[in-house]
Length: 130
Image (cartoon, rainbow, N blue to C red; front, side, top):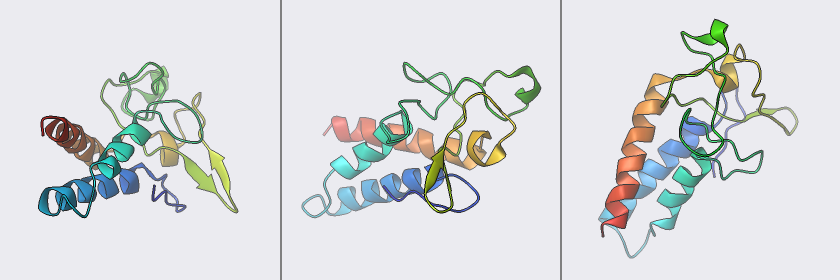
C-alpha cells in the first residue's frame, strides 16, 4: 500500500492506487490481478497495520465514530464519510487518534476521498461479477 507521510494521512493515495489498478486490470487482466484492487478496499475498511477501524464512518464492525465534519463539536460522525486515515509522524510513528475530531490531518471528512471510495466500492462489485 502506498501510504503517504505528508501532512495529510494516506487514504487518498491508497484509494487512488486501487482505482488505478482497477483500470489496469480491466485493460490488461493477464498483467494486473484484481487482488490489488481488493487490497485497497480492505485497507480502507479496516484491514491495516494500525488498528481494525474502518475509515468509512458507519461501515464495518468498528468504524470511525468521531470525525471532523460539520458535526465536530458534537463528537459524532456522518455515515458514509471517509477520513484521511493514519498519519505517519516523523520519523516513522503511525498516529490514529479516534477520540479527538479536531485533528484534521487524520479525522476530517474529505469529499474527493468519499467520491473515490464510492467508485472503488462499485469497482470491487464489478470485479466480483466477472
